[in-house]
Amino acid sequence: MASSCHEEPSSSEPSPETTISDIKIEHEPPDSRLSELGIRSWP
Image (cartoon, rainbow, N blue to C red; front, top):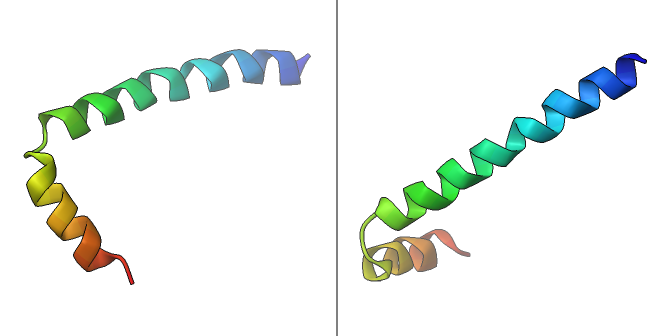
């Protein structure tokens, strides 16, 4: 019973979080800036 109740909210929480993450990336600066930082961060 507890498992069923815990699964409902658990699945609903990550759903909105993923959307916010995607929107944040789109609102960030152009890929040119992200690419430079990404390449520098990469080993």
